[in-house]
Image (cartoon, rainbow, N blue to C red):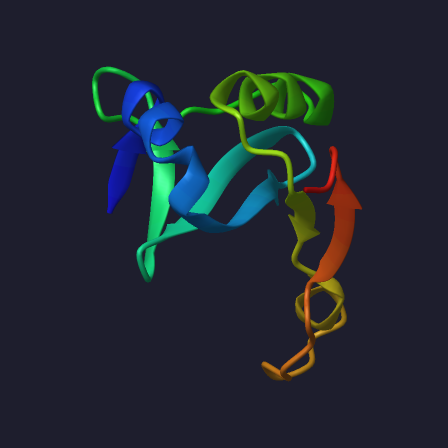
Length: 99
């Protein structure tokens, strides 16, 4: 499911969790948990909004009024060394302000 920026800003007080997801260390996307649904922040054409940096994501979330967020980076280590899928939790780093 997707959400555009204006709708995110309007629903900011109902956001339960916000993740800035690292995509291959090159781009970042924002996912929010809103009313029990995981939503991807999208542009006006309903395409995933890809941001060039963590500061750009933080600035956008500040503008939306969302203070608490985490940078999330999934580990590709097992895949790189040829191991089977083993449940490794992603790296989670708090970023931004806290309510």
